[in-house]
Image (cartoon, rainbow, N blue to C red; front, top):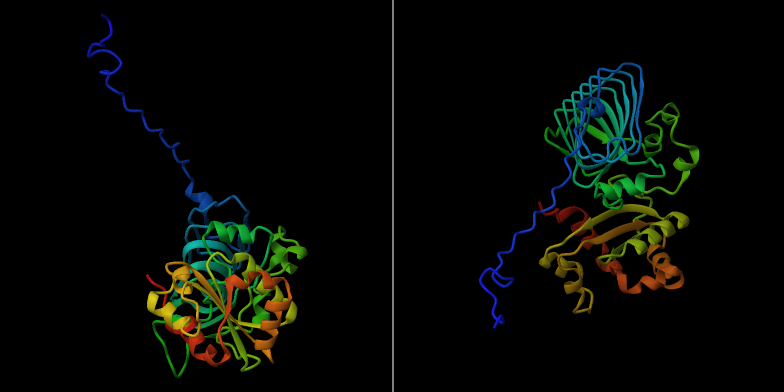
Length: 339
């Protein structure tokens, strides 16, 4: 008596699928807002938020001071002469083509130039930089700073301590007359006409560098080195160690962030009697930093034991001195990034 529901009742009702919420339409961009083209003797500035992860191109400019102070998807620099250019953190690639007598400060994941002449570059690059059909190119470590740089590098997915600026691959290598050389590091900070931009204060430039200055393939001040490995998710300890290095005037030789293969991890930690160490690092990013100086091993060990870095004991490993040279060569040079 009324206890049974018909097929048309609640139990038999056909469920109407909910409509998926539609993403808001992407804002239509004006290409002219993302290009500097055919400018002469001008100061051109894009401030934070004006590019916001889009592509930005620079083409056919002469004697211009150009500042892209934002994070960017990718960037092309074509047919420029006598320009001074800053390109903010780039998520993927920067391509520089057919440029001459330009000074560039660039932070990117991949750098490639072709058919360029007489250019000086202060570079942060997460992969090995590539040059092709280019001559008289000079490279130094990235040396520039402003308040929003750290956040922009994070937005672009760049790790400040993963810089291969010095590992240049030249498609047209010439042993007798090399196509590239090292730019004196002290000149890297003078490549840009910062005053012309009018938006960066002296205080910003003088702050502790977001990107550590590394020696790379330059002569090292001492043969004594120390190779430190940081476990996954150790960013705070990496920052603290780099600050300690700067305060102690240790020379930072090389830095790298990488996911190693199982056999590589086994080689790197063959000296360690920690069965769980390989599992902890498997498939995860680890960071290596090599510093050099007189009595550097003791200095680093003391810092790790007697300063605030002692709280990171579970996250930091110091490679034994007898293994440092071989393992550092593997870590920083031999073992390539997985593509």
